[in-house]
Length: 340
Image 1 (spheres, one colour):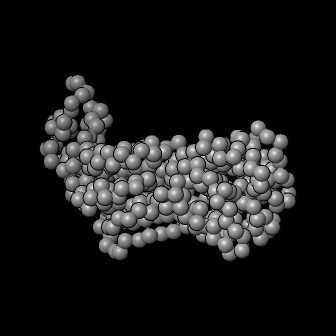
Image 2: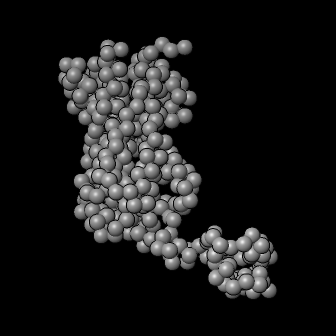
């Protein structure tokens, strides 16, 4: 017998049972004897039969597939969040389809529509959208749950899992001020039309204001999360007549660009310039000197967003949530702390 295009009927014939009996065994339904289960399973092995799970799931009205839509798979933050989400759903019997929008707003809407066309049961979305109307329409018209992570937008009927960016940035800058008595602190920021970029800069400003330090707009540079732009911004800051005493990088990508420029100079960290960054990954602590940062929340964000989505898929009825994640400082030598 050929081992392709096999059907339940072929399995039933080989096992000497009815098609409905084979179906009951595959679906692990009750009222099937151990002898019958053994015969059916032996027939499946003999024929090398593979059940058509997609067809079965569609008959049951579900696909067991989750969509994840992110702006940049190469970004350390998003790759780690996706890893945590994927691990959670695999442990809960769900598969994943990942959509990467390459930081293009037009592509984001297209990828969401593509995910919906795949009949995903729910979507976790890290949006960069400035025009929220199309996304709001998709959320409300298709009737599947969405959880939005990292960036807050004005849409209803979704759950949010966000970083408490403002408070966390405030902690980082306050440490430079209160522990190291630094006042001339520069900020290399992400885009201000994204809540994460805006709030990371807002926390920086709040820390300065709370300590009666005037905000120098020349110390604020926008690098849009990109290494090459951060390199150029760092060059501008270092070549100022009144150059800063410290630089705060609002994510690890921009930290890399910042350090690439500093490596072309004779500036010593932290003796000549303190450096701190918002993100914390393995390579951050392995740098020379190790970089002061904030404890990572990526695993927590991934798991929480996945749990919220699974609860919605399973029909849990409760008010929509907005969860903000905080974390402590990871003190290392780049800020000027003399740690052993």
